Length: 81
Image 1: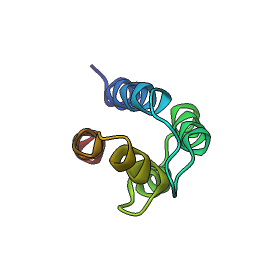
Image 2 (image 1 turned 180 degrees about the vertical axis):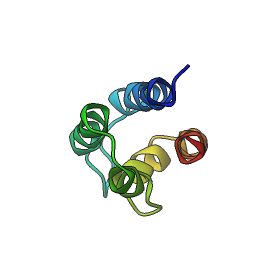
Image 3 (image 1 turned 180 degrees about the horizontal axis):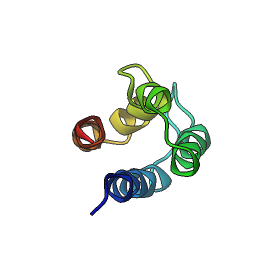
Image 4 (image 1 turned 45 degrees about the horizontal axis):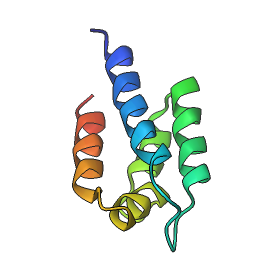
């Protein structure tokens, strides 16, 4: 599988997890979906860094919705690619 296809596979899995989550106190689900969609259209290193930052919107959503460990797994997969 090409790297681009693997990155997209991880992003789609991450997107699915976000879609099933609720907004968090400090995070907005629609903003997280928008960020993931932007990376699916045009992947960039800076975009991944912003998406996966420890204090980013997406991490807050994952923690508030009980899948923080899954977020860390997705982040590790994307960083390795």
